[in-house]
Length: 266
Length: 172
Image (cartoon, rainbow over all chains, first blue to last red; front, side, top):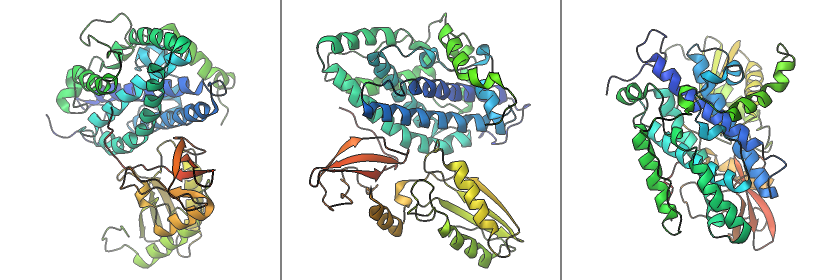
């Protein structure tokens, strides 16, 4: 591990490019998940879920804002521009976070998997040599705790269900798994990120930690933890900007109003 | 009070600013002040310039900008303060343990229970009947920092401040 990364990094710092790429991975994940969760507003199958998904969406968007502000302080531009105006190819969120919600079962499975991953990622970043990430990690984990608790309860209920619910759940386990791999990827700067301690776990180690945590939950059921070959080459990989049409559609919707009158103030 | 030992640090004015912030209510729970909630992290005053550091309860709390504006306004009203800067700090995470005893009492009177952050199994006392016999109705509530319980004794739903202490999640 090299020396601690300076908080006020400049563009000529040898780690700058890797750091910024990684911060975009974090911020873009949060933005996409926040947007997807918000899509259930008014449509969730129960009033409690409406409140829960609206709250989770608000918190994930708040996390995104915090991370874009961090990027802004490094000189990457105004936070709203970073969130809304970057072209698709520059986005670093995982495909896993951009895929359209699908039905309720797919949403619960995907959001549960994602939030467990986020918890592990923040836990990892509590040891980051980049102090602003280490500082905020504890706060993020305290908030993620409630997301995981809620989604795990729904996940368990689905696993114990029957009839149509169980059929949809089993279908969801298969479809959601197919978009999992790039979630664990750290992009083209992985070795730099790990060696510098900005992200003190490799993609394989992040996956292992995630797998282990899920294994405890699934031990009591017939469900097996998704096997992911983290080292495989992916056709679609959000961490290097290769996104699906789902992201394109999402960005179109997200920016629709802002594009009408670009100079207007909110 | 958390203030760095600077020779030109104006201790008296710093106390005045701290005291004044008792007047700034939380915009979503007006019964308590920011000081009651433990959101005030550090105040320094040097040559009439007050610098206030706040701790956000939740990173994505939508009231943060509003709170910041209210704090700035109140600080500038303090006599001898000529300028003010208000920022949010991530140096120390806010947790529900930071709520003062006075704050807990005011929250209860307002109908919001407080769960002892140090004890994971603790069930909050119903703010209406005082009994510890409730179940969780929803982990999420009207604001990010609140959740909803249902009192089995007096059959009344009530809100509680979320415990935001860091903990290990146990599964299984």
